[in-house]
Image (cartoon, rainbow, N blue to C red; front, side, top):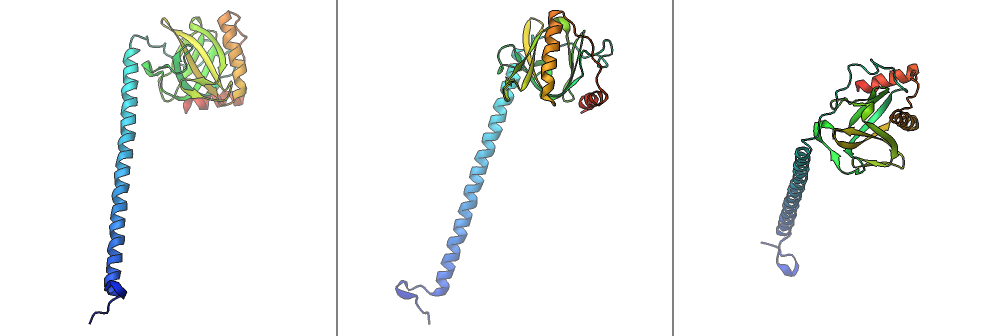
Length: 219
């Protein structure tokens, strides 16, 4: 004989069965919604990357007429002694001069990387482990300054060293940040003096600085 459960007429066993079924249904529903939202999120991420890739390619085609920068010499300072100790840090990219959001992507100039800089009377050597290095002849240097933003990267006021230089008929701004930001002052002064024709006297790097520069080049 079945014993009813109050006015509902449902046995305890049947009530337990219904409760378990409801829990299972809720769990299936929760998983379904989880998978749905996960799928939507993945599609949005992939769509964003696809749009960024297309924009990058389009920008590269638009900059196809920009000449390739000169290749870096075989050895830092091989032809001329450095004008100041080398700088190691980060390269944030290059933009059209005066427009910190108009990134240059042609010839790998848009690739961010660790960097090692060497300045001689001949020009500026840029070594980037993550991309091809390049060389800016002294005649193509236009100046250096402090900035808080370059190539879409924003840092505290004066946190970036920006070097302006000429590539073909286009003026570019290249943004760098030293591992030791206190070095920026000397670099701004040395580059601007070189541009003005007042070439600083070569400065030998201290042993620890030379070692630090070599390690940064090999990263």
